[in-house]
Length: 361
Image 1 (tube, rainbow, N blue to C red):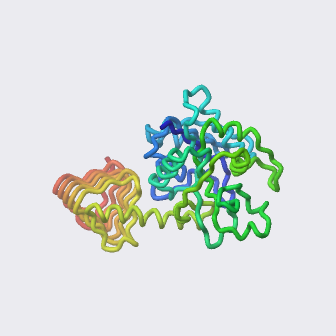
Image 2: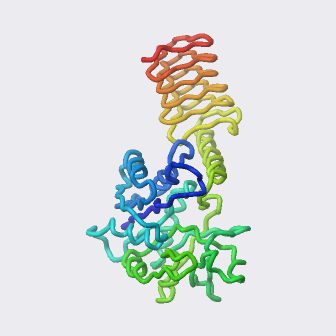
Image 3: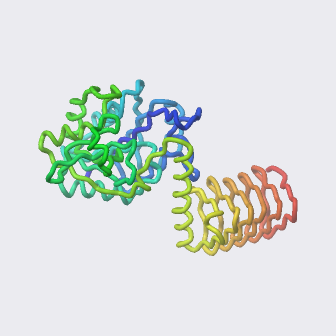
């Protein structure tokens, strides 16, 4: 099964009210767009095309530096923002010259869906291939679907089209099944369908959603896979960013709790997705572990410790401490109220005492 992916990361994200490009806003220690790329892990795409636009240079550099090697990332730029259909067409140019079979799958997904799980994308593609679909959409059912494109079905239940909120008739606005902007397409059908799109709509843009009606009108098979809205909802402002952060932290903490880590209060324990933790570690309330921090087995961390890009040796105790790019040897006791600046080191079995500031390395 040949799979490629297009990640749409060209938007400005004006509602974020930030100078930082929207795809680079951080959630649990990783940029939003990188969460999306990591969600492709089970698919191992032959190529991942990232469509950049606003802040293209910044986004390209960050993704180049931090993407996993298996993603095989390539970049294409949408210079003028003319809609998701145009962005997808530009994304397809990254595959020019690549050798694909006629029924190869192209997954298209937005760069602002950081809660998407690899298992969900795996199910989407498996359903798509097993049913020989022209397109398979990931949809969600919402109590309040305001702002989302509605999935319009024929009386027999088959998908007919997607209608955007601005273009929907009153009866269509009552539909609660929404398009999440996450799709699997047959590659040989997607390209021709994209070329038929027009900008005859209220926004004057080329909508990727219109590809669904094009394929349906041609009699091709289209199906849906439903996922919880908590997983598929995009991030458009700081409030949604905070909600996504809370959900992802809960997932991360649960994973560590099931793998031998004790947290006295998971709601007051903050662990980035990039951190590694050994077994029989106890994390007290107020612990913040960030970046590439690595905690050895049988450590006690906290309360009120913030460790950034630091290595803590087996059996150490670190309390009321701030550390950046520091190293703590096995069996050491650090704090309370210690400061470990970049390059500092506490030797094995060392004891810093209270109100200690280590010399920089």
